[in-house]
Image (cartoon, rainbow over all chains, first blue to last red; front, side, top):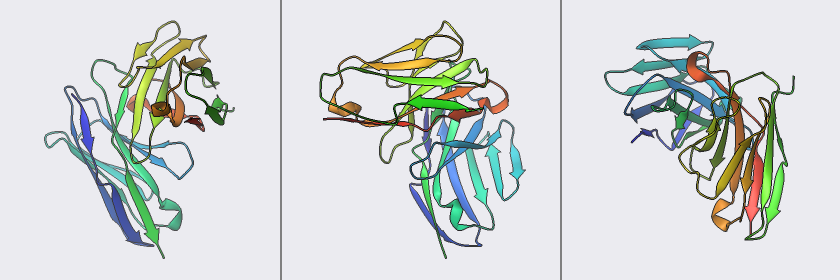
Length: 111
Length: 113
């Protein structure tokens, strides 16, 4: 089967750096994605890692280690608007276009 | 471009009633998906359509049927609603490119009494 684990909640203060970890177990692996979802809103795509290493997009970075079946999302210079849920997702085997999502990490940013 | 649109936004059903959730995308994507999201849980795939004319089951297909009407439209039908189907339903589409980025509609909040 396929499963992903990520912390349920993370709390941080404005201006800080926070790391959200994701470990996965899959029968086949193509890449790890991250999505952001504000309360009452729809998920939106943040980043994708197919190869080991760090991908940077502005204040957000995402890291992947395929050998450790592990990745993380790094958010820098936190702002109040970053308060949201963050989901990691893997492309599922047996269906090239399918994604399997983790349960999500709720990030609360405080002043 | 509207992106991905869903109707209705809210719906309340009684147990045993049926309804169809509509989804349309204007991004010319081949793939479309239906997910449900329950409190404290991630998105679970109900059904997907890799291309026009094809549909496949996802993780939680029981109690649902889908129709890929054309490239733009992908509908989800509940034939006999149950309280366990109370959830937020999201439709998504994807071009199948790098990362298989998926674009989500605003969701339908469904309550089954």
